[in-house]
Each structure stands twice: as structure tokens, then as C-alpha cells.
Image (cartoon, rainbow, N blue to C red):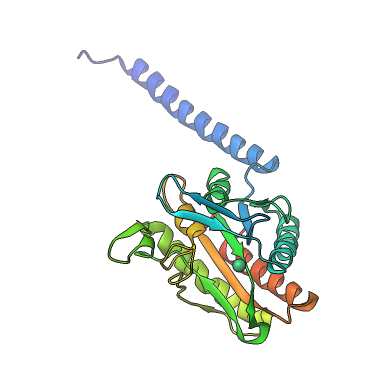
Length: 260
Ligand SMILES: [Zn+2]
């Protein structure tokens, strides 16, 4: 290849440098514009438990029975908690999406996970309470753990949770939820295992199906599942539960950076 005369080389150098600088400037401009118009908001999906009508479908991708049912007054209470959490997060600058638009909506577990995945949420949060347990003595958090399963048997499950990256994030977030909820809810909240074995109509295993679905590619997202005692669950307990969950989400996913 013949040598370029020095002035051509110089020109090429300036041209390339100018191009790179222009590219950086344009990308900085676009970044700040996106932030300014709010497209950069972090999305959180809130998932209040249970459906208005009984549903019993079969999930096409895993062949798992996708079962949910109305549960009163858990449904009404956790829906109000979700709305209170969402209102606080919106004020703090998050984008909030709910898996149910109304307390009586019927939404399958697969559909709930899809809402989270399609919105590219930084985190999904299920909110339940258990009227068989007293508020004072019961607070639990479930994480998406590697090797957790549903359907069939543990040695031959229909579906197994195998997403290492999501498992690591979910475990870190679950610890934060247990810590932050314990601080405000006036009882101890712990990260615990959960079993769905020997529950008629429900697939055996040890991961809530919504979390299994949400944490599976494509568009896998971390998901945390919350339980609390529902006996003596009055307006004060509702307020404390909402505060505990909102504090936890803010500690997990800061709305001032994209850090997760
Ligand atoms: Zn429930």
C-alpha cells in the first residue's frame, strides 16, 4: 500500500478524532434528554396476591398447573398494601406497574410474571398475608434459589430454577427485605424456605411459580415474595407492612442510579 502524504494522514487523524468526540457528545445529549423526559425511571412491578375468580390452567412452557383462587380478606388487604407501596415509590421517582388493575382481577401466575418481564422491571414483588398466623409472630421472605423446583418430584421436576445470575441478585435482595421489614414491622422477618408439597390442586415443590416464571429467560427478572401474619391485621399492620416493603425496595434498587 502506498504511503499517504503527511497532510492526508493528518486530515484523517483529525477526522477520526472529531468523529469520536461528536459521537460522545451526541450520546451524552441523548442520555441527558432521556433522563429529562423520564424514560430512565426504574420500573418496579407490584404483585398483590390472589385472583377474583378461581383459575386452573396448564402453563404451556412448563406444563405446570397454573392455579390461583380468591382469598378473602387477604386479597383486599394485600391490594391496599400494594397501592400504598406504589404511591410511595411513585413519589420517590419510580415507575410502578401492578399485576392487577383492580382488586377483583383474575390474573394467572404466568401472566403476572409476563407483566414484570415485558416491562423490564428491575424487581417484582409479591405481597401476601396468611390469616392462619398471627401478625406478631410471622414474617417471611422467599427468594429465587438455584435448584428450586415445581411439579413432578424433586428428582424429576417439571420445572427447575436454574438462573444463576437472577438467583444471586434475588438472594441479596431477600436479605435486604428481611432486614428492612424487621426494622419497621414490629416482628422478626426472615428469609425462609417454602414448601408447596401435599397441597391439593397445587404443584409440589419449593419456589412460588410466579418467581420461577419471572426468573427464567428471556427477559428474566429478580422477584421477591413476602408473607406476613394476617390475624389481627388492622390498618396499623397494613401501614407497617407497606412501609417495610417500600423501604426494602428503595434499599434494593436505588432510583438515582441504574445500579441493581
Ligand atoms: Zn396468599
